[in-house]
Length: 232
Ligand SMILES: NC(=O)CC[C@H](N)C(=O)O
Image 1 (tube, rainbow, N blue to C red):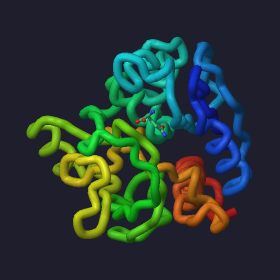
Image 2: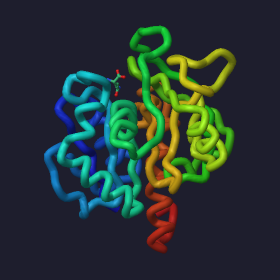
Image 3: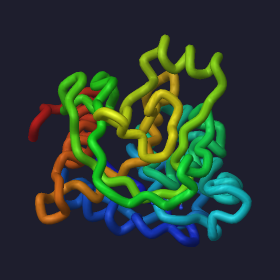
Image 4: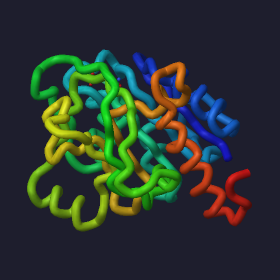
């Protein structure tokens, strides 16, 4: 299986994503510059966090026009696995690949700490190695993570089981997100965006290894799709 990690001007979690793929599942992975015009060689695309174009206007607002985004849209339409983490989630919503928007954190502060998350849907290609309802610890680091969508969109997300993660625990909503939403999928389930950073939780030295199973989930889903043995 082959992964692309997209690099925008200002990405700063690209190396973490690359290392997470290498260390957790040992699959092929390339950095792909934002000017790229062909992603056909890749099975999964990681849109990493950090900043893009200085996050001017809004986080992700300029990055959605980068040449590579046409290819990310094509890959999504082809059913490939696409994971947007933090700034990557913001870019995927700006590009229309995921519904809703990420607003400034309700407290108007950049929040950077571990947070418990509930796995709300373990039926996706990104979460199949977790139990339904499992609570995992993953760090956040963002200033614009306050998920918002209108009532109609929220009803669709709930009806189609598109809410993948919520901030868990009493009074734990670090950014004011609607219904504590921390991650969602598209209707088809092959595109997921999340504000927390699983790539920063792949070793106990980092404080948690609960993010590892996102990467093993993707490999597992790909192997199932391709009829190969799982858990290898
Ligand atoms: N870690 C990140 O990707 C941060 C995203 C964005 N720069 C924000 O502050 O919200």
